[in-house]
Length: 493
Image 1 (cartoon, rainbow, N blue to C red):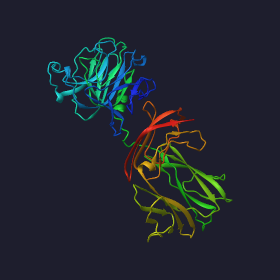
Image 2 (cartoon, one colour):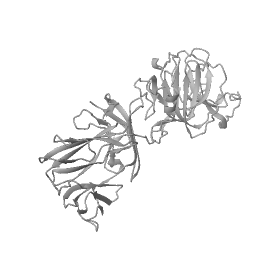
Image 3 (spheres, rainbow, N blue to C red):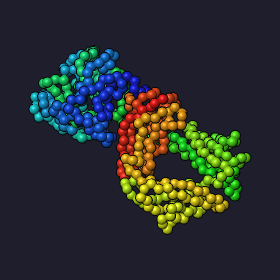
């Protein structure tokens, strides 16, 4: 079976700041008292809290919410924080139908021993140790249901109910909780959908807890799709076999600026680098890993390396080379100091001697230079190699903060004009534990990376993505602490 979590998606509510239907079908919820809360992944205002008294979200009925095929799937990501003590002790996550046996009615709830002792309505005190999730649709069961998994409070649960036309199945955290035969036609309904309660004055079944996300499908999901939903984790490291093309260069012929030794520095993740295509910009090319090339004339050239991995992934690195001037061999690295600190660490490699300017310490002639700054400061480093060749470059030490040093633009235009063609995180500080993902309005990932310098080119599976607003999630850590950002990026063409 295949995983396609967009197919048959009638209404997804991700509760990211509101109760809108993010599919664009306008099945937007009306919030009645429920308040925004932190979601499962620690993002503020990414879920809704229901207080168990008078909080709910109401979704007006529409044609797109009537499952005429008589098959459907309900997915909910919830955290239970209390139990209803009214009549029958029901707790409703999502519910349609003022009565459970109405045509087209369905629900996902949790209750104390609902199918085992039959005492939940007659006993005024709920059995909070033996609460379990369950689902129903128009009371079409032909056998009793025993749901074995008992709820632990303050724990996140992935709950999925599936009507495949002949069976009603409930999954908790991806594990089949029960499977009941159905004996009838599900039917259609003109009633609204309620989240956090049941539409009944006698049995309101108020919920106490947090709902992160709800999805309704007009089809039955397969087991791979259930696993994909219940095991999704945006914070998990994502294995990749990507390749990054890179190279360095040196001048081996007594500082002759026209004869250049290129050295491949390409890296492949979970693969090896097996191919190199060099274009030196003057008509010359090579397939060697580390070619030596002599230019006939001075001038400006663009050197291109296309590296290929053992998994047939390719990456391109372009380098603007000036031939005829002083050779370039040194690699200086600046520093970013956050939170008002002033100690700076600069470094330069590739030479044998170094000279830093301005000099405010005893290590001005070292590869590693430690000094202090009071604001963003440029430093000039002169490096000399073993042949006596000199390379001079300028690096910067930035004084910044999490707020000023990490910015996610709200729009980009991948039209090839060389300006704002790529959606990326702009940062002037060192970032660790980095994860950046972009997803479409249906919650499907279109781009993700753990490289702070990588960006999305506006393509999905090598085809231009449509003009739209895409969501993003950023997690990283700097010397100032943890960074979490969540918002929207508009693709404009």
